[in-house]
Every structure is written in structure tokens, then in C-alpha cells.
Image (cartoon, rainbow, N blue to C red; front, side, top):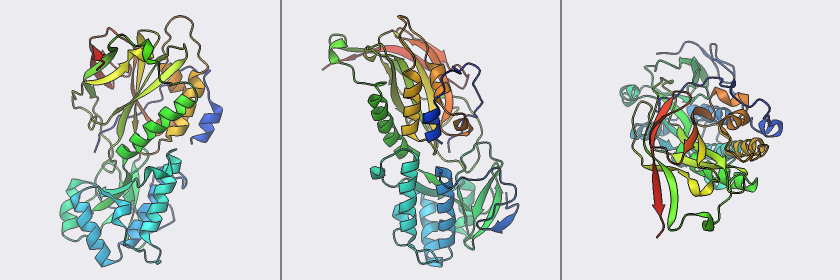
Length: 384
């Protein structure tokens, strides 16, 4: 499970004039207590909105818990959970809930709603996954202890989470201390969602003229110069036991050859854990796309609720208000200001930013927030 970076409300340095009302409007241990399903559990930190990704996950967790009343299905589910994270839609192909409705039908519909909530095409396919909440629960699950089911929370700072049993009862659990009872966690395959989301963002940004392919004639003879990441590390922080993997990506910004702000997206799937140094030798900036020899990088993290289409629309609306004044202007603050305030709770998460990366930079560059660092070097990409 990735240890994640806590969020702070970094708005002091943002461009307050850059508000995007239209785009923002579109984005939108043991049990302590028990209560009937459908009623709020005492001690939960916040209500889960039903139309959000978190709300859909919560509904799915409730349905999955109810299905475990069937002993045969419960055994099959146990074997799958002990093997690792599994595709929920594929797993539930033959399961039925006590109401007679196909569980896989419910899961398939939940996958469709999640794709829509994240601004992804329905063809993205299954996104929901289920896993055992913590390795310490394996012994109890193997011994036959009846598991509960919970959805991964949308908030890293949540003090409690709600889990459901097969009788429809809701139980409040400590989000920081894993319970002794096994808990299945319903979550999203963020790697798959991010890959699809990056395609959506590229298309949406290009549609608004913020990220267009550059003519090859503008590139240096025989290739192009880039900035390559030779090593990178993110700061260490503790997150709830129930949280699953998140995915890191970086928005590289600067002025394109046409003088308009440009955003390029860079996936960083190797950044699995904080506090670990990685050596990716990954290209971060393609300088042939930019007018100046300076660019910015904003590192973000998605662990579920990001609507990529809405994010791209918000970025485009903000950046297109900025004009080329004949000299480089940092665009980090414009990007941060374009993100709706509500997103600073957990989704998508702002990790760190690097101002004025130069084409000639070599060596270590610390992030502005102090949450990460990277070492970079110029690298010439030769043309075949």
C-alpha cells in the first residue's frame, strides 16, 4: 500500500484571479459501533455522496458483503482474496445476491458509473477490484473468520471507516489501526484508470489548444533535447491501513512554439512507495515542444476520484488566459489555482512542484513543497 503525502491548502502563492467557475462546477482493532445498513454509523468522519466514485464503491461493498451469506460463494471469495487483489467483475461472474439480482450485473453497472464519474469512456472496462485490507488478516481469514467488506476511503485524514457484514449491519472501524477481523476492501485499479485518464487529458487539452503536437521541422537536426530524471524520491508519511495504491503523474507546463501555454502529461507508474529512491532514467521534458528553455513540473497523485476530463478542462480554461509576454512566466501557480478547492481533500492530490526547470539543469532539484526531490540531466534523443 502506498504511503501517501498529506495535503495542505497551499493557496497563498496561487493566482487568485484564475477562477474557473464552469469547469469547477462540473467536477465535483475491532468495531466501535454497529447500525443497520443504510443508517449512518456513529463516529464516521463524513457522509459518502452516492454519485461519487467513493459512493459507488461504498454501495458495491454493501452488495458484496450481503452476497457472503452464501457459504459456497464465501469460500470462493476467501480463496480469491488470499491470492491477492482481483478483478471484481470477473470474480462475481456467477455470484448472486440474496435478492436474486446478479451480483456481477451490479458490479458491471458500478464499473460503468465509475468510468463516467472519472470522465473515462465506457470501453475502459472493469475498474473495481477487491483485496484483503491488511496482511495481518490472512490468519483470521484462513481460519474461517467471517469477513466484513469496506470501501477504500476518499480522505487520507478520515478517523474511521464503515464496513458491512453479511447481515447488512454497518460497523465503524479505526482507520489507523487494522482490526483483527478480516476486511475485504473494494477499490479501483488506479493503474488502469490513470492510463485511460492520461489519454483523455491529452485529447481534451489538444481540443482546447493547450497541448498540440509540434511540427518535426522545429526539432534539432537528428533528434531533440530532453530533461531526463535519473533518480527521484517522495517524502515518507503514514496513511490509513485501508488505502490502496495510488498513481503518480506529472504535468509539465511551459509555452509552446506558438506562444500559448502548453501541458504535457507524464505517467510515473514506478513510484510505488514514499521514502524509496527510484532510478527511472525517464524523460520528463521534451524541449522541442517549448519556445523557451524553461518549464515547470507539477506532480499529482490519483487514488480514485479524479475526473480527468474535468481536470483537463479546468487547466485549459485557466492557462488560456495567460499570454506570452516575450519572456518565460512560471505556470505552476496557475495550475494550482485551476484545481477546485474541494479537490484538496484527497483527489487528485498535489504532491509537489518544480519551478523553472532549465534545459541545462544537472543534478538534484528539490520540490517547492519539500515533499520530494529528483536528479536530472540533459539528454539528447537521437533520431533513427
